Image (cartoon, rainbow, N blue to C red; front, side, top):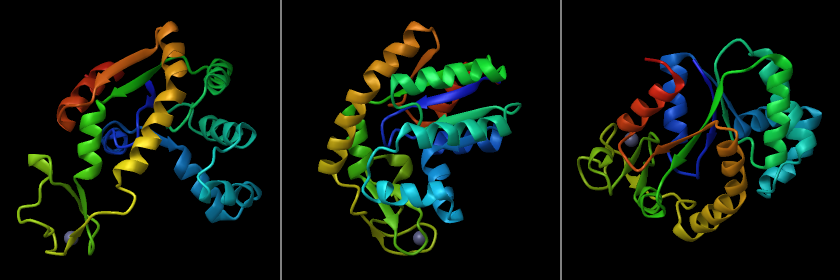
Length: 217
Ligand SMILES: [Zn+2]
């Protein structure tokens, strides 16, 4: 099975898909957020260096993030992996491509989850989370709606809208994402590694296409 690099806007469904691939196809999910949070939790030198950068939501410098991923990739190089949150820039993509060559990782693709801004907006604004058990719903999508309005199907808890599910914040993040990833998408397209997946559809359909491009069926 092919290794996967994800390029996707926030709320495109990357989390759900990664979880599926981890469970069903034994992928190792390497996400920037998880790796960094882990360093902070372990109280390493890197951890203390990045703590403030992360709380301020700033970009983690290359000299920290790249070796961190390199270390993890060296550990798992025989298993299929998903890179999530990296690369963000062309120089990082170059770094990874050299690293892969060095350690003999030849088979990888870049999956771009393509979602329209309208669908993303509905996913953000329609999201409701159970105050009690954390189950999540979406009032704009039939399959994700709770059975009773504002009440959790699992535990009858109250459903709330999270503060960060706010369209203004999201729009800023989305614009920033588009600006930054455009050169990256071009980079992988030129290398012939880019697979564009229409992620405006149902999760099952998206996963079906992804299983096809990773070569699992
Ligand atoms: Zn609940």
